[in-house]
Image (tube, rainbow, N blue to C red; front, side, top):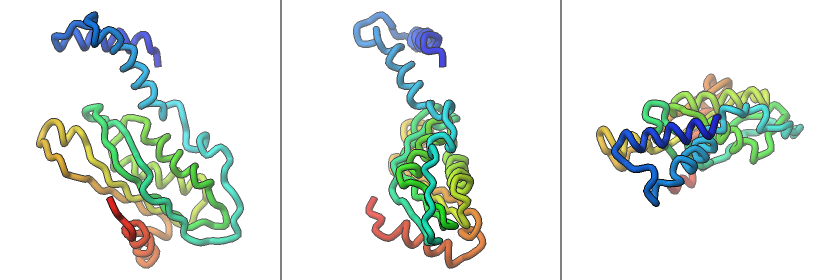
Length: 189
């Protein structure tokens, strides 16, 4: 990202909406916005394989692994407004497991792009499967969208839930039910 170019575009936007980019409160806003967008879209420079960084370990088991309530923050590609919530990721290993922090890093990597929640959910599931060779993967995401809360229909409490199931999570109803039971047990949010 060309930070100076983004700063110039933000100055233009401030002028276009009737603001004075030179006034005290806005003088450094173009620089701050450019830095923020650099951070919020860092996922374009990353791949899930890179953030996993080889942290796939032999486990000798084929149990279900679930990480619940991973905070997720992204920008909707339609309005470039934030959506945020929680992501729950589960998989059945084939003797290989991810370092637990790497699941959160995969979520962060893919969320740090302009997204729609439906695609993001699927991308996370595919990345976990690709990195682990898992027998099955399930992802459930629950998010609130500021584009729906602050504009348009202005519904403050609406939450969107999406899921993606691959392999045995898709093909076997009992496996899928076990995953969903784990995700919803102790669900306190």
